Image (cartoon, rainbow, N blue to C red; front, side, top):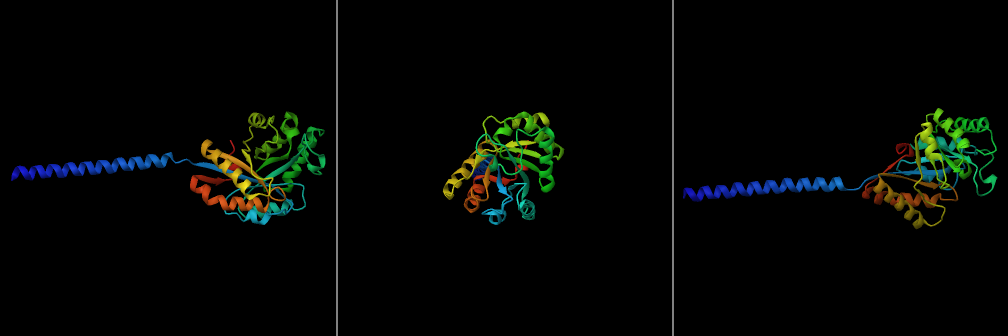
Length: 262
């Protein structure tokens, strides 16, 4: 009888030990799986604020953080920037710059052009900051000619640095010198990963947004550029709004451009 009792106790202790060991192993595996779940930061920059373009108010009503890039020399530049700040969005200057393609008037009445002197370039960038004091950084509107030219872009970055700002390269040319020049001058920098729109098709914008999210999940962070107005507007806003739950479930955290700069 005593032997049977001792054997039963041994079996009971063995069972308890195995149960607890299995539970601890399962918990460790659960933690390991959780740690393996991909995550990434995705910043969305919305260009072309400043015109009260299509989708302006809807875009600013989005629940996620994003960066509003405001054209500095437009009729509603100041008004749109103040609206963006009131909505809790980050504001940067969408600086018009000369392009190697297209017409000069597409850049606008004011901007940065290769024919300008160093002092003229710095003066127009200073003027942009004066119009948009809310701006914490800058990206380029068009600008392929300027972002390939170290002198002109260097003048721009000198002012950005003075303002303690950052620079986002919209990557309108594959020969941009912005990254190297920003590093040389000590200006925080990041570049576009994906353009979202330029289409009236919501599904195309969603496809591009998922592409940006995939880059963020793979590399840790990514930056996508969309637009208000005819290049995007309501279509882009709808695509973003409808994808927010899906992307957050996949591990995406929406941030501002300023959260990504290095």
